[in-house]
Image (cartoon, rainbow, N blue to C red):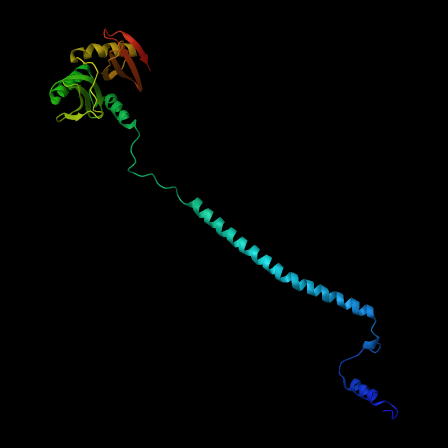
Amino acid sequence: MNEHQHPEDQSRDAIGADDPTPRHPDAPAEADTPDIILDDAAEPTARRRGRGILRPLLIGTAAAAVVLAVAGVGLSIADAMDDDDPAPAASSSASAEPGDDRDDDVAAVADGTVPAEPADLEAAIEAAVVAAGGGDATSVEVERDGWKVDVRLADGSEVEVRVPLSGEPVVRADDDGDDSSDLPLDPARVAEISDAAIAAAGGGVVVSIETEDDADVRFEVEVLLGDEDVDVELAEDLSVLSVEH
């Protein structure tokens, strides 16, 4: 150490000699650092601060996106499960279509299960009138297990009588309870009514005869011709008024 050297300079030299941090031989002292370096160093700091502010926003946005994505997957799975669910099965107790009974009636005539000759219709009418306790038949119809006959009683009311192929006839009160204005169906005329209707239809078998109180139409007859029902309207003298296939 130079004896003329100031004590502060001596301490600085001693610290520099003992400091293990390597120093560039040409590195300028801190006091000599140009201001432009300081300005350059401030810019990265500002950038770092900007990233520090955006990072929570970016993390929050990403988290929200993940939540939405998971929710979307959940909804998609739920929709898929709904699509895969089988449709509710129809109840086995559902009522049959209105035309089912009529189809059975027609089949009974077609296969000969229930005879539909004029003599059979006459016999069904006579049995129904006896079961009802008197009165006049106003219609007769072939059914899958026998015949159905509407009977007008003396007091004007009407009952429905089911005449089965075997067993006793069953009398049922008319549903509407109104008095009937239908004209009597004379059993003695069933054969000629059937013949006139079959001739008008071009063949077939009579499955029902019903009287009408119309001024012109006296009998409405349904004829089964193959798989087709033919409606024939007859006047009192059995002249043909209309034929509807």
